[in-house]
Image (cartoon, rainbow, N blue to C red; front, side):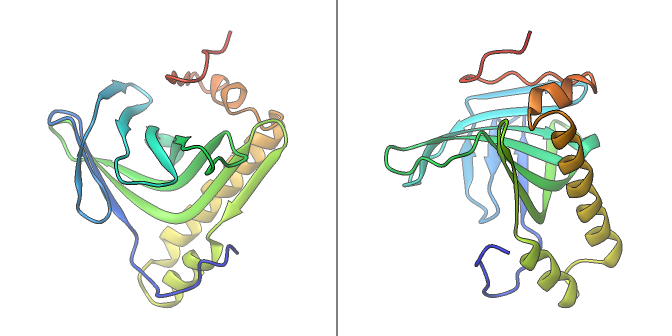
Length: 180
């Protein structure tokens, strides 16, 4: 639990429009994207984050088959966090024409490379389930994704690149050197 108790909300939706080079956030704000890459295993996005006091840039990989969105936030001075990557448990659906709809399934995993993972927002998932905003099947799938991800990261020393390389997935980031 994270202390984010409050109004129960439906799953957040976000659109990644590769062709238009935009990202529509859960509040409906359309943001320009600097770079998209579409690879067989996922979709990469890099864009500025104007108006955010905590961070000024965001890089994300959508990994549909893993049910994950992996994000590297570029924090502003004074807002740094002890994390390497932020993993959202999500559904990623290809809407055709280079458009990807992402449904956030509440659970988040904060990876502190080499040291561990913290799971956030279990309270939100359970509240949404209790309010009928999420089916039992979808809630169960979200929990299973979180468990499988935790297990895989633990078996690979909490090294995201090491785990993903066993699946043939190599993520390239602007700030992080490639593995190998």
